[in-house]
Image 1 (tube, rainbow, N blue to C red):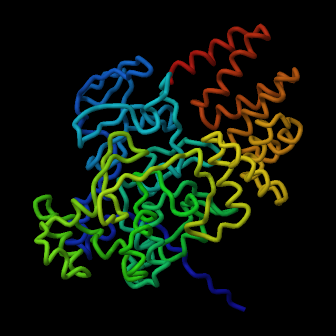
Image 2 (image 1 turned 90 degrees about the vertical axis):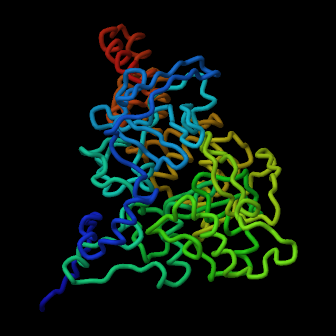
Image 3 (image 1 turned 60 degrees about the vertical axis):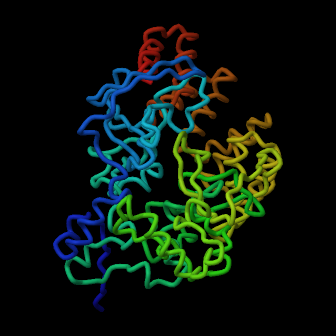
Length: 474
């Protein structure tokens, strides 16, 4: 009996598309998506600023260094701003500084604004790069180490929306055309990067890098939002859930999607944008303002720009399309329940979403809900790490220890389990775990602190000094 094997298509890169699709290729290369990452080659705007909360001063030179550290890669198209990454022995970290091009200034990167002691140790895991770069080359078994270069193609590639092209290049297969897919599969392609929700949880055995255009994104990950669609404001990647809140989307249903207004292959010139998007609005609202003599710029009133809640000084468009500009009152403490936005929202995914949020916000009700949902389930490594962390916070050390042992590849589990061993004097076991965590991510500060203190307490000063020297790099 002869067995037939179907060839598995792989990613080829944009250059393979250029020979047959020259005009689209050249147009797309000028879009923000295509320019969303790359090596720092031409330098950066020089500047200097002082962070008020920490007192730290940052000096950025035109050749691309900041406080003596080389900025190796940029993230962001530059339309709103650019953040920067640097590499240490192939491990990628985010610099705590960002260039905000809309305001023409340097300031703290998103998430660093309120840090009292801003460090240079924020690890860039593969999921961080997923929506900014293509052909990512992670070294598995680590948290943030990559081959050189960490991504083989700058920006978001053609294949992110059209699928891997190796078989198509050989004439053996077609490519995915998002506009010809049924709505759920079509919208999944945009949602992989433009839907954030309050939490995203990958399905057991799945990872975002495994998603392929034409599939249902909900089969790879579940996304959750606050119950009732309540939102803290505009998020840097929250366009999909904001559009879902709009009356336009609710009235139009599947007819209205990202492609109704945006051509991903081109961006209208700045001086043409008002009229370009007005024509998109008039496709459905032909009589808009006919009696009141309203102005030509629909978006300035109905899609106002505002500062994003998770992007520093970035200012983006409100895709909730309010009838009138509005400020939404939102109190984090009173809004804690989640509901699925995309995906089934099964107990595992919902429980992990509550655990993630509860750990980040300290919200006791979210933590309680995570424990209720996760405790009865079969344990996988992600559940073990999250559940162990929650139980340890509640003083249930023995149960947490057992769970951490089931997540040997988790840096969090290694660090916390080492802490449990160290607290009862099992120093050799603790030291092995902390060293293992640092092999996966040398910027893991808790592991370094625990390791250095323990080595000093044991009289192993030379070893402790080496760990402390390593910490100073961050």
